[in-house]
Image: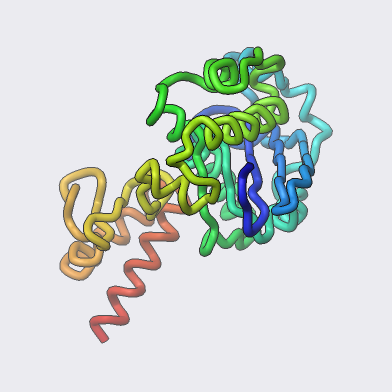
Length: 255
């Protein structure tokens, strides 16, 4: 059984696309598991305030007509923040997509969704580490069930919860806590969700461009104009937020 000291919220998003900087959420499902095993579900359609590409509608089944009267993210942001308050976060490919895009949406509407102290469990990382398949295959492999309504946010989030429970049973070396699971699969600390920066021996370094592998703080100290270039560039808001934190820290050290 999964041992929790705080709630674990399984998140699944359906979206207008996969670009963290420009795409929007059209559906969110949260399956919240409390330490006593209680399971609460929250699902919402969201008006993305932009057209949903036909190719994406064909994947998740959500059309412009279905969301035209739905609330915008700004209208539900505070409610979602309250649901997720005090929760660790989990999902399938959630560290690279669902959580980063959710954080972007909160930042766009000016809601402070604090990620400090939250632990992240990406069930896809466990699966790829152990078996290397997709969510439907993971569900079939670990739970011996066929995933009905794939790409329905609630079905996917619920299936992901079931897969994690099956994984910790199958792989005792994972342990039963969020901390032990991340340690077992070698989950790297996240600087920004777009992974423009990564940690190297406890130091944030660039993960792209001409300064790849170089200390972010050192480059910003030597070339403060690089900060301005990135802040004006087409980078996700979370990347800019982390860049500003590092830049501010660097200036304080200089003084």
